[in-house]
Image (cartoon, rainbow, N blue to C red):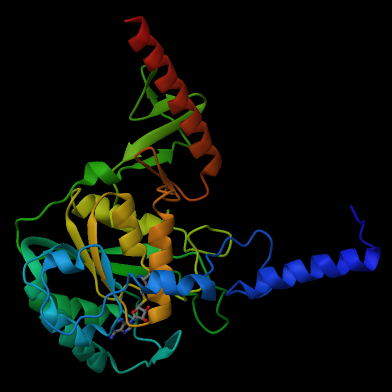
Length: 355
Ligand SMILES: C[S@@+](CC[C@H](N)C(=O)[O-])C[C@H]1O[C@@H](n2cnc3c(N)ncnc32)[C@H](O)[C@@H]1O
């Protein structure tokens, strides 16, 4: 075998790196950067799965599909009463570029009008027992509340801490977002058992030597708590997370998992009309629900398809494992708990074999 001279070897490595970068949509990617990439080569494969609709469709034609078009040009063609859970993450009322389109900040009244223009049409898609979740930040929330009040029964406003972004010099850094939880009627499904939190107990209290409201696994003391409307365990996707994409406002899979587990059953249908890179569909698929997604940017739709394909072989949701929602940065506890669970299963299996 011919050995390479030093300069040939250097050129070889440089060519390899260049070709890896050319295949990548993210030039100059750092080694630990796990952001999902979409190469030009794979685009036609994912594009084949996208839907365009221009006449009335039934649920079978759109189930578990991504509709790649403007929601305003889609709504009239969708069936009635097919949605169990409607999750809406619209552009917030700030000027923001979403790939090839730019959403322009407007007055709060105009934003409320823009919202109402699509929301009033979506009421027709809902089953009588449906739940609705609508996201917003402090600039949009007042409009979200007013418009929701017109069409739904508002149940709550969830606020989640979004630990991302640099501090602001002239203002308080914006570290929170809202999700308005509504239902169409008083008959709705809500399962708080499915979204309990496992929290570390810092000051374990005993009464007469007996642990009060807490348990112990190995040396970790913990407590199960029902979730409140303040969520502090959410991590906004960033470059070293395997769910991250180049979308500027992608929602975390863990956040969708909470909403989907609390407000839908296996086999239910979830609609996301501003789907971005498909977080709703991906989590629905991982949790055995059905979805319909609408997104006007084709590149984002292709990312959604790629993530759906990846979910075939990777069904984990970061921060949610073995039916448990963990606090932020609890990776070592999650690993410990999984090992313990594996041990328990192994012992259980041995007993089954012996019995
Ligand atoms: C806040 S992002 C949603 C992100 C999404 N939740 C995710 O996790 O990827 C809003 C999305 O709405 C899309 N969008 C804006 N106006 C739209 C319209 N009229 N029809 C369909 N999609 C639209 C944007 O392209 C953007 O991707």
